[in-house]
Length: 277
Image 1 (cartoon, one colour):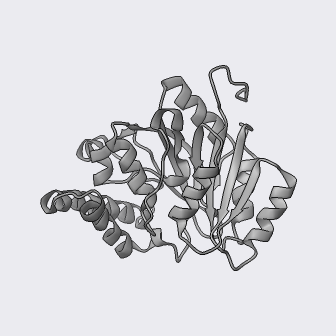
Image 2: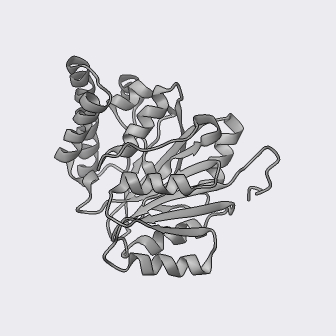
């Protein structure tokens, strides 16, 4: 187990978790953080006016562990505001993102923090396993490339939010744009646009839950949002936006086909990696 003693500065990891009507899953999410082999963390949960039992469940965990904090928004504001509120209240040098229906493997924080410190990395992400709504693994692993820069991410977002860790001593303060979807993707683009490269730790360290009514499962809506990012947020020209969008559609179709034919992962071949780059 990695020592929690820090000779060179704050090594506290702040776990950023927005939640809304997540009573069905939030307990499992919190348990996956409690199970971490690296124990120098705080979990900042921001509830976006849930109408189910989410707050009651979280309060039970807060009462049992002072590393877990709950903030309740006064009005429903969306995931960007919820995440930004958590970030504003975070005390850690490192930020790690975990949505309220996803899970981490026990060594996630330990391995990722070690990876970042050994290589002096500001922005990292990892492989993750996809699972069904009931928590059963699909066998489909989303693999992280070794690195991703701004232009690569415009072609294909390979970064799972639940796997990201940021060193804010290097990146500076971060904030998500206030849009209902794709706010995490825009943040990755913003950081990389500043000259940072995102580095992939090629180990499965998290489980992503595919929930039937989630935005990420609505392919047409996601495509429209990606186009909006190109044209309205990144202010990319029409021609370049079309170029990036063709790549976006290609990789989405490839992932869909690989899942339908039952392949165990969507790992890139060397040829496909070169196309991506």
